[in-house]
Length: 226
Image 1 (cartoon, one colour):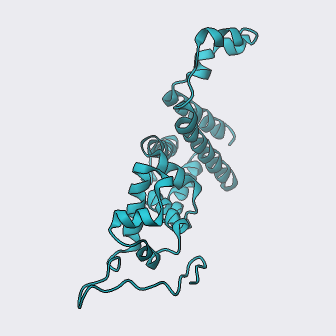
Image 2: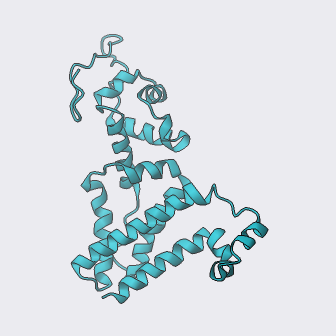
Image 3: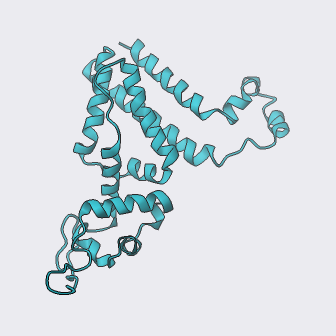
């Protein structure tokens, strides 16, 4: 079997059940497979995705999936593409900050409600045609803010990385870490007055306020840099 990425030859054919009746898996489409993988990841996590498990979900033999994808990695890429295709593209009119925030809030909403899907979407290869509408919308908003073409790209990358990092912090660190014993923490910070004065904001922040405050800080800085 040739398993070179993008091609697969020599795959055993699924057996037909009778005249006019397609073999199991032949009626599937790549969209069906990717959509099922997306649902599986959303409910059970990326670790649950195997060809065998996905075949069970779809009611077909695992080998039938190779008619549509060369391997699990390609399925994960397709899942990420599905996620981006489903993300709303902000309007081209209206205040530029509101348009940028709408993109950022949509990404954060995905992270909070579908953390497993978010991790896949943020770590896989996305074909340009899937991400270009969102990139173009962001650059158009930054253009309306008066930024030069080069500054628009810097602004886009800065905001993108901030949102990604904040979301990962929320779903991987903030949800699991606890402030611990307040008396012990107070003693530990007694030698650092500036930390002690903001102890709750640092160790038990409000993530909604933190996200928007950080985003506003970045957007104000970008506007001031014109």
